[in-house]
Image (tube, rainbow, N blue to C red; front, side):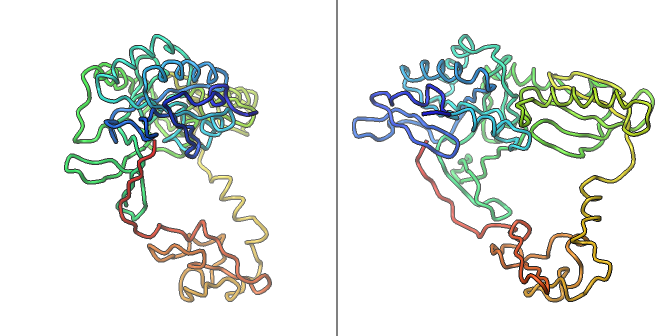
Length: 382
């Protein structure tokens, strides 16, 4: 089948089952009745393997040939298009870089798999997985999390993936773009040196003090800071290697290098910030520029959009049938914040602005504030 890696087209091995789940192709060993083998944990330390578009094919071939004879469950992204989207500029930072997931039975097997796969894959390039702890120099990463689909409702009323805490309660399985260990879990001793190596890299190694974040994407962050040598305010633009892919498949480092070249060609014209520095920290590139006061391009466009810039505003033109006295009542959308939707409401008609000419126009993306509360559930699929 076109668009799939060779491994995704292989016949399912005898004694195994496969199934699709979102972006993933899951493979797991089964018993004689076709059910998952007993004794598999519902959560624990999992291994993620990172890969680029040009080495993904050989990476999954090696992992398949390693896991199947040893009856180790795993899943992978089966084709290059899905992998590209997972590593693109505005892909979720919590899932970026995750090409293969391997489920060890316990900590001892975890250690064995990491050491043996390092021999097979060590040094292969791939995006850094922000949620995980990197093993050696990659492309292997580890994180404690769920092995099966279980859900709970978080504090904001949203249904999220869940794991059990030490009291047996389902709690959110956090997948934020920073490695952390649940409070009731002990980090295995063999992972400690890798955590120490991770923590040894800090922004203190830069001659700039980062003060705030302006923007985040899968390619990196944009920060305001101060040059500690001069006290001047600067902007630092970060680029992560092999991540933040653009339409031409260029990663964030390549694109930031292009931006640096363009800015240098405009130097001295007063039309763009001056380049101050080009630094490397933990494999990440940083372009340091002058800080210029101003407004964002999006806000400029929004104010000048003819649709929202009426010379004689009509107070009855913008109204909400459900909130007649709210912010939708008389203020055009370009000049007001999000409509005051009722918390917990999950309806495309909660906040509706209408015009005298075109009738009601729903904007669900601005009105859906939270899903209705649901009970915790568990689904035993890998």
